[in-house]
Length: 349
Ligand code: SF4
Image (tube, rainbow, N blue to C red; front, top):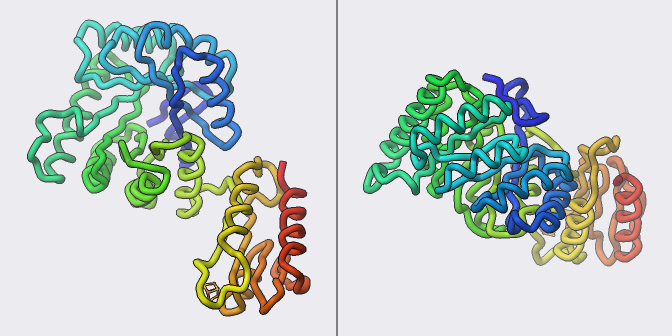
């Protein structure tokens, strides 16, 4: 099933699209656009903004004029805002049809048809009363039944430009729901573990949930929702996709956990390498599948360093520097750091 969201087409290939969401006040056009530009720079391909009021819906027009990626409007409670969002340039709207009166839903469908706007049907475990005190299997079943019921309402109006999400803050419920839905329907799926947590715990929960689904070929767009700066959602999403061999946007960083044998400051150095790697645009560079290894000693260091494009490894009171699998020499620590950063900087955009 192919679904168009602005310049993106879901379902036409296996590419999983990375989505994020702004946390600015949408009415503040300047701040929202600035945040979207930051997200675009790090690889966000689809961005959602909250539309809690009329001013925010009207702001979409100016926001849309200044960004290049498709814009998704998130509507809750005031369904009429979906109409305004569509008229003001949203490429997709996210609604929960269960909270919308039938006449308003029909109006939304007709306008979405007219403007060729996609609709995401968001079924959230937290908003379904029937799920209370049910087993996770039953919850998943009820969520999918609800999504299919909504889909048939849309199809009855000859509207198929749909994406579905089945979110729960419980990982197992989400996995079961998405799996069950994928076995029954071909509509594209937006994956997410809702209210996943902080930059650390949220990334782990999302990696487990989304990773299992993506590994099985389920999912067209993903969002790693984090209580953090949204650019970390994008970094986390690419790390999940990279770990599964689905997409690589950033160089892969290999580093050891350090131990009593460590002879260089691996922790500090990896942080610096990460900061450099995630601050650059690697797309289009000949080394976008670059691997950098930072290893503390000669136990596993040379092996990993040789496998990488650039590798450094503690060697007694010196540091060995590897490039393209070959050792260049051993140097003092600051010298190696400088060499590594110079090499990486030459490759970045
Ligand atoms: S590579 Fe060396 S320093 Fe790093 S964890 Fe392994 S043994 Fe320890």
